[in-house]
Image (tube, rainbow, N blue to C red; front, side):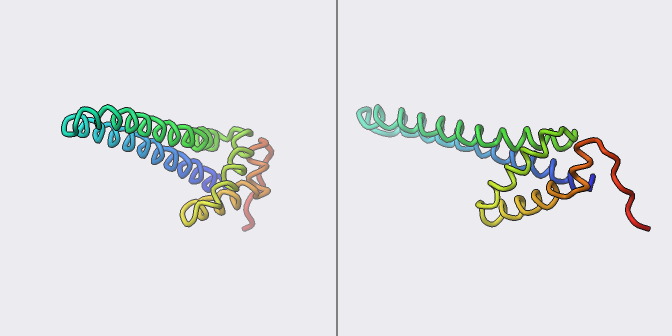
Length: 133
């Protein structure tokens, strides 16, 4: 199960990284659109549109950044076998089940890995039984 825990940790880091990239993309895209609007639109229209686009870009980037942090923290904790990471990973996996289709796969895999008795022993620093010969 050690391999599965490491894989799950990397998956959570990848999901968190993708969300950070999405946050950066939205922030830069809406900022660029605000710049284009400012350069091409009438001054009265630009005065209304630029703050709205700026606020929307910042809010969406903050939203995606905020929701990427649990995945990044959990991934780090799973890779280092932190006992709290197992609990947080179970919660995060259960929440991920509603994100069809990728989140469902990640959530189901996470629950399968983290609810396993061998994984529980691994995170509680108990000896893990040797596989049968």
